[in-house]
Image (cartoon, rainbow, N blue to C red):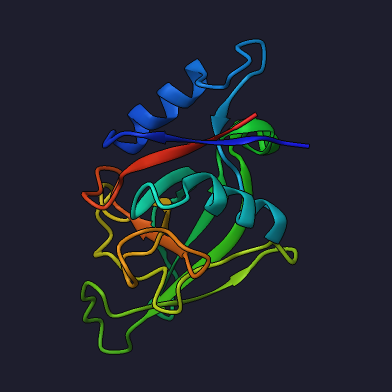
Length: 178
């Protein structure tokens, strides 16, 4: 089976990805990468790896840029972009969720919420208010973090996924997978 390890650090998502790729596993012969969460079992294992060490940790997912269709609906796709899943689709990653945001009056506001759906029965664990619409900034809320910022301030069994900035102040670390 796979092993998960928490790296405590306030790195950006890109720096956490580089650190994970450089390996913090106990056995340096094993390749490590930012964790991908494709099942409830893996979700539980990543939460357990964080323990009470912090309020949030980056994992290996990113969102594509927003696109707009003729009905003024905006959408983007979330994909696992690290590890074996990141190699799929010619290196574009494994898509697991399509997020949509629609406002008939055309007024796009931050934190108004959005909807979406898991692709191909993919596992997801979004907080009920996540992922949310983020004014389309390429640096805002385009990475995934396991987060308990809605709870007690430390990751617990109630932890959920949160779309966050790649430089989130909520990050206390990242999770590697081998």
